Each structure stands twice: as C-alpha cells, then as structure tokens.
Length: 351
Picture: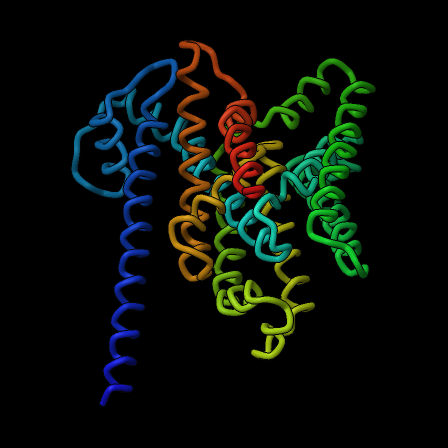
C-alpha cells in the first residue's frame, strides 16, 4: 500500500508539473498574440488595435465591417511582415534549442555557429552571380541552403574528432561566423552600387521584403521541420542525459545528430534566404524557455518557438517605433536586445 501511495503521489506531482508548464506556454502564447496585433498596428500610418482586430476577424469570415483603407493596409502591407516575424523568430528559436541540445552548450545557435552567416553569404553570392540562370526566387534559397550545409558539415566534422569539447566547437563556429560575414562583405565590395544595396539587406536583416509567397514557403518548411523534431522529442530529451545513457535507451545518437543538424540547417537557410542575418534570437529564446519549463522537449521545443516568435515580433514593433517615421533594420534591434542577455548568460554560466 505504501509503495502504491508513493507511486500515485509521484504521478500526481508530475501531472501538476506538466499542467504548470502548459499554463506557461498558454501565457506566452497570449502575449505573442498581443505583440502580433501591435506589430500590425504600428507603422507610418498608425492603426488602432480595435481596427486591426476587426480587420483580422473579417479575414476569417466574421461579419464585421472594415474600411477599405484599413483592410488594404492590414492584409496587403503589414500582415505578411508580421507573420514572417512570427515564423522566422520561431524557426530560429527552435534551431537554437536543438543546437544547444546537440552540443550541450547554452551559447550554441545557428547564428553563433556561423550557419546564418553562411546562408546569407550563399544568398548574396547567388545574387552576384545572377542566379546562374535560375529564377532569383529559387536561386537565392538554394545558394543559402548549400552554404549553410557546408558550414554545418564543417562543424559536424569537427564534432566527430576526438577530444573536441563543446566550447572548442563554439569557438570554431564563431570563426566560421566571421569568415562568412567577411566573405559577404567582400561580395558587397566588388558588386555594383545597385547590387550592393541588395546585399546590404543580408547584413542587417529585414522583414520588409516579406510577401505572401515567401511567407507561405517559410511557413511550410518550418511546420514540417518542427513536426519532425517533435516526433523525436523523447530521443532529444534522452540525449540531454548524456550520450551513453541515450544509447542505452536505444537511441541512435549519430543518426539523430545528423538528422537534427540537417533539419536545423534547412530551417535556418530558408529563413535567412528571405529575411537576411538575424542574430541572438536562437540564443535568447531557448535559454528563457529552459528556465521556464526545463529540458523536456515536449514543452521546451514549442516554448522555444513561441518565445523566438515573440522576440522577433517585439523587435519588429521596436524597429518601427524607435524613431517615428524611420524603419530600423531588425537585425540591429535583435542585437541590441540580445547582447546584454548574452553577457548575462556568460556571467551566469561562470557562476
């Protein structure tokens, strides 16, 4: 009887803990919706939150009368940008979460490991080469993906070497970050002024080129990749217990790492090919999620997505409100937000 009582108490405690995690996820989702609406409302022509809400509800079939001007501004101009902020922020948050899981290091992310910079260089190189005969909408993502996979392959090859610590791998990633950023600057330097302005887009990161086509592409890729990662959530959670323990549970660690790395590279390349290089979301979002719900990937992965989406959506709002009438590149805003957190993470890790 005593043993049964202890087991029942443990099950009850676990269920209560899971309920608290769902409450946290629900709270973040609520704040994310508010940020999404505020992102649509802000801009050169400020809209009231009520107007934006009515316009969105009318889009999904609710019989609400909305002015033609408001409907055009919301649907054609601001909604694609706001949705792109959610999707890209979420994909970067998930990418950072899985890189930190694979390397067991809270400072790992597609940005700090050079994958985002590599994707940006690949996109800029394809622009410089005129797409090699391909359509620009197809050539740029392909260039971003290929260079991103090259960077990821170099890192994974280093990870396979003996006596390579996660800290050394992070340093190698930072070296790749500077390398690809330098190559991106070189391509910009040798380009014509018109092309140089296009490449500058990749250096700073921007959501202004979002449209319904690239929003749909990014959304489909992100949904598929996140769904595949969620299927492996228990394996990724087991990996956090250590390689040997994960292997004892029947996890093929080498296959899981390669599969996860490819998925993260696909998400990073897709997002970067449309919005440029955006840093620190992949570091900040997973660490906040870890503090709130722990390492269980069933909760850690969705919360990393939601927090990443919220951070980029909030950065989008800030980029339009820092200086009225001016639009700051969103990569600069995320860096301003992320750098203090990065220093705090370094100090906290030392403690």
